[in-house]
Length: 170
Image: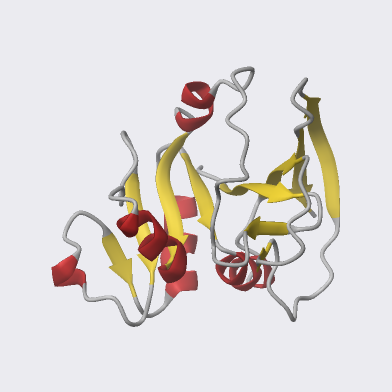
């Protein structure tokens, strides 16, 4: 059964996007096998703001994955290449978790993560901490959020200073 995995890059001070949503501070470390990471996922799950950032960059999908966007305002007819879910997001995510296939990459953002975490629909939190302080921006976990216990399952330290941490949600 597929697991929902919140997998993101984060600054040391807890942001997944800069003050204007920028991500140019993320290090593309050659030690990290991005193809191997991407091959673990069959679905990319994003919120509206993250999707709009992807659309501005001209990339609304990822090779080999279906993209599911949680949004009450986006018009499905304008984005036929993705599935847009406006209502009953928790039920839809729960059904994805029960189906066959590869894991689900909860790609962003912090508000969607908070919502799904509180609904008990996030299985793991996987964060690559970048050696940078942004001083503000898009938070890793939007406020207000409930306390959730995590269990460390893996970690990797890269020469670039990136520290990747993987936790199971209790």
